[in-house]
Amino acid sequence: MRQVIIIGSGPAGYTAAIYAARANLSPLVIASSVEFGGELMKTTDVENFPGFPEGVMGPDLMTKMQQQAERFGAEIVYDDVTSLELDGPIKAVTLGNGDRHEALAVIYATGSAYRKLGLPDEDRLSGYGVSWCATCDGAFFRQKTVAVVGGGDSAMEEATFLTRFADKVYLVHRSETFRASPAMLDRAKADPKIEFVTNASVAHIYGGELVTGVGVVDTVTGDERTLDVSGLFIAIGADPRTHLVHGMLDLTEHGTIAVEGRSSRTSLPGVFAAGDVVDPTYKQAITAAGSGCAAALDAQHYLEGLSDDVRQGANAETVSA
Ligand SMILES: Cc1cc2nc3c(=O)[nH]c(=O)nc-3n(C[C@H](O)[C@H](O)[C@H](O)COP(=O)(O)OP(=O)(O)OC[C@H]3O[C@@H](n4cnc5c(N)ncnc54)[C@H](O)[C@@H]3O)c2cc1C
Image (cartoon, rainbow, N blue to C red; front, side, top):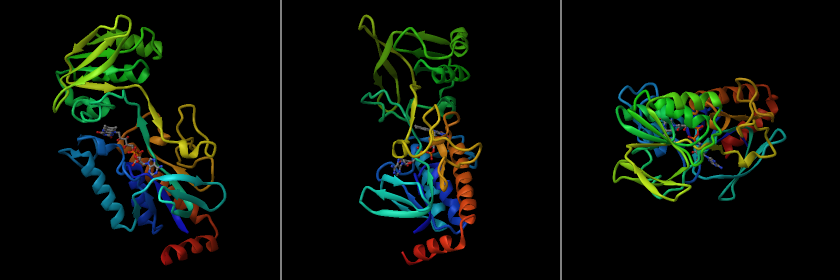
């Protein structure tokens, strides 16, 4: 039996692994079989992660985090968790290959999946003009024209934020009514740099190496026209990856895992959650890393509160495993 198992290998999971390993907790990280490294593996330049004044490529940053965790003794398994048993003092984690691991504590850091439009070139041009995060990528579009897709608060916020850099922002929305709050909608509508394109859905993303335009179809007439943009920001929501813990852990109204105050403690003792899976608001690599750190410290304190017999049992089996 392990002291702690960490599920997920994004900034939250690897930061939790670094802290847990340095606390001699010999963490086992279940990194995922194909999506190890998390969301930053899908992007190019990351310019807002502290410590990299020249910026860093997303995959390079995640490789460095992985190496840092391994340097202190974290063990990484490249497989997916398929089921969990989380109630009771001993937690069990079953993987796609059938292996079953037990631990006294689990840190759940599976992130959140941005919703996609489902267009053929969306993934290919991700990081090359297609983005899900204006905070991350807005500065790459100085004096350019960009489009934002969506009709909720986040789409309004992204569009308004992008006017700091872009000369023009199209706000493309499939209907004439908006989910966004009136205040956010009014602010976007009042902005002279934002042009609303309503009753329109994005049907094509054009571009060889970089985005050069998007084809939008009028949902009433069926007519298609091209918007000449160099960036497409997709703001149609995100789905926290919680399916494994439905019915086990309390969730918030946003679908994220509920945690106690600023801690990572979930509704079950010994189960901690960190990163975008608990965060409907900030969703940045650095905030995910910070919450991974908090989860490792919370897990460490939880383990220290367990009886010596229980903890030494975990140590002995980790050493002999
Ligand atoms: C294209 C793009 C560009 C971005 N650019 C920036 C940027 O420039 N700066 C910035 O700060 N933020 C950026 N972000 C946001 C940032 O990537 C996220 O906020 C951050 O990665 C969240 O970290 P996380 O560890 O919570 O989750 P994630 O990075 O999503 O990692 C979660 C991990 O859990 C794994 N996982 C999920 N389910 C299972 C399972 N069942 N078994 C095992 N593993 C599982 C996933 O495969 C993944 O490895 C960007 C996001 C995207 C999509």
